[in-house]
Amino acid sequence: MAMEACSVSPTTFFTIFSIILSVFIAFSDAQSTVPAIYIFGDSLLDVGNNNYLTVSVAKANFPHNGIDFPTKKATGRFSNGKNSADFLAEKVGLPTSPPYLSLVSKSNKQKGSFVAGVSFASGGAGIFNGTDDEYRQSLPLTKQVGYYAQVCAELQQQLGTQAAQAHLAKSLHVVLIGSNDVFGYLDSSNTQKQYTPDQYVSLMLSTLKQHLQRIHSLGARKFVILGTGPVGCCPARRSKTGDCNELGNSISLKYSDGLKSMMQQLKPALGINYSFFETYSIFRNIVQTPSSYGFNETKAACCGLGYLNAKVPCLPVASYCSNRRDHMFWDLFHPTEATHKILVEHLFEGSAYSFPMNVKKLVSL
Image (tube, rainbow, N blue to C red; front, side, top):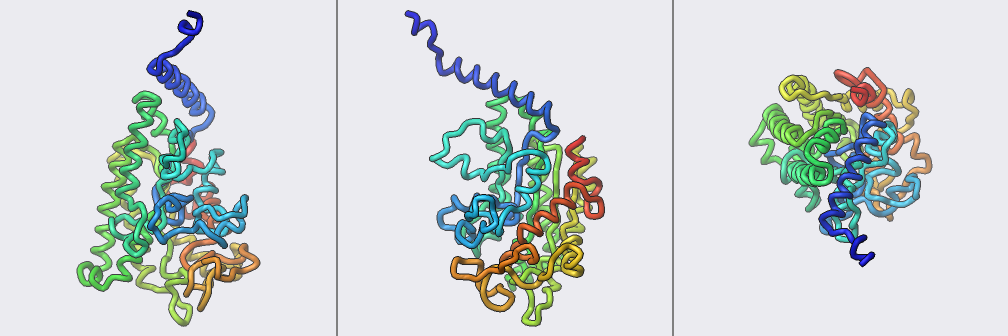
């Protein structure tokens, strides 16, 4: 009889669990203006989602990736160490938002994981569906936003509608995407025949706008939006003489400038706060004056083989530089940990590249 009196039905247990979790989240939100970070993007922010895409060839879960990560092991980050997602989390005092696919995998039964934030970023992803065709599989932005909708629904079940909305409104929503769409244009003669660069950029922006509006409709109120860098200056896109691909750069700049203008329009229309980061400008400045940022090499990749170490990706058979700190690029496409750290320093506390405010100001609102 005593045991029967102490037994708790599954329904009652779930109710108690939800109440405790709501109290915990309310306390956490009181301690921090940013309870979580939700990330949308490509390989520049991917912290391991592509590890769970079985047929994808866009992976970084093998050496020499991760050589400078705290564990000294490859994690799925396209970097020698940490990337911008890690450094941004450190800035606001949170753990790195885990890969969404790791949380929903059959082997992970953890509950309440989405409350601490989650990353949907995926190597090879683009604004358009199909930009990942070259890599066979990634999570394009459409799918990432769809997963975010599922996360929001689960948060409402766990916390209740009002608490979930308050939680999402305080959280940062980081978006960095578009480079793969630019590469897609450069690599497709059919696309170039169908669209002028200006028309293509307009389509990128209008499509992204729809995704941002949906993210907002689901509860997001604080956005960190990053433009694309000068993609034509990455090792893989430089000419045989080492020059940047200026068509790629011009498209990237048009997109970034258009994105900056679009965010200015969305702020009053949606009632959001945001920080837009001019990735293009700071990358261009690093390329032009590398020594002022502590770099000696901005053309060649640290890890790879062939001209500029850009003919072969950073595979286990590739060689890599001994001093990763003086290289801007880790592999044929991606920055080193040192570059990521510089970007986040300016993103969070700087003023020259952030509009209308830096992220430090954004989180205080």
